[in-house]
Length: 369
Ligand SMILES: *Cc1c(COP(=O)(O)O)cnc(C)c1O
View 1 (spheres, rainbow, N blue to C red):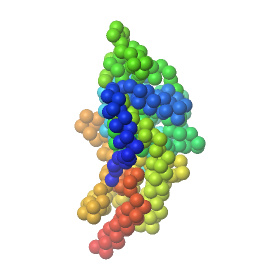
View 2: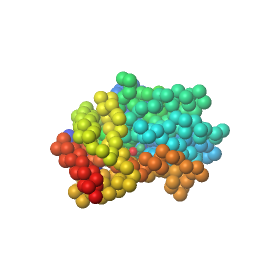
View 3: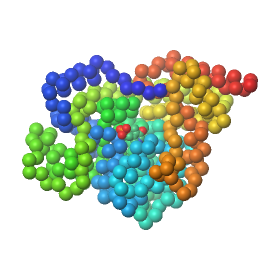
View 4: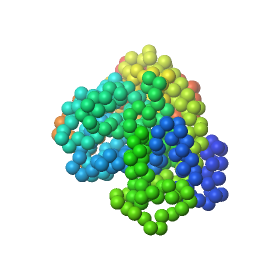
């Protein structure tokens, strides 16, 4: 369903770090951060995971115990855990069935005196609806933090994700649009947030990021905040820098495979595809919707034929830890219908045609029965 795509370029880059015999946060990390900063035209702090990027970004905004953060229920568990890691409570909101993104009305209805932020997830890489939601929450003076883990490379109306709002958090884990093995980044136009994350990723030691990039250590530290060991390391950064250089190839391949799925699945009754514009969107995953009574049967059918699929995602408001006292109709409905088809750089157009053909076959068979 998904995998990393690693060439000799990444292997050579890792070998370069091995030969330098400095594996911590050093020159490769500094360069990766600089290259991303040039790309976004923003401040960038790279960290060890996308989850910690979200946690540190929220903490930089002063969010913690006693606060609430609104989160769409249909997301990777990481969005919720990053919120609860700060001590704040994630408050589940519903999604828009046409995009899978946070529903504006539902999000507004969850605002309370304690609401300190909203997490927006660009589901499958699609930023549709983000600008409208951000504008609305600006009126309430509530910041919107983007979980942009799916959306590296996506754009809307000529602006790339990372440049839409004030706080975008990316993930570079093994299967994302680009990877550094594990990794993440906070992209922001807010210099205070950048400075906070730079310290918090290194145990809260004031100015330690700068010192380390100048090959110095901080022997007389000043610490005023709770910090973590969330920095990126040079092995990861070296992989990330190569992947970043290869991004155009990754983006084009993902876009063309998703478009090909769209075309090949169009005629099949029994399923629906999301209506996305793959000129602008770099898809991280390719979910379809199947009638809930047939979803699991289709999943098993494909499994038997050697095609791995996924379900993105189980609604987080149904988990014991995050259990909501209310229902979210769209999240609960779409969860039973979602099926994620294989999508990654090393997939061929023939693979996509084969998967599409198998799906067509399934629906012809099930109609006969
Ligand atoms: C991958 C992902 C994350 C977390 O990123 P990690 O780097 O794996 O910690 C957060 N949110 C979403 C939606 C993701 O897909």
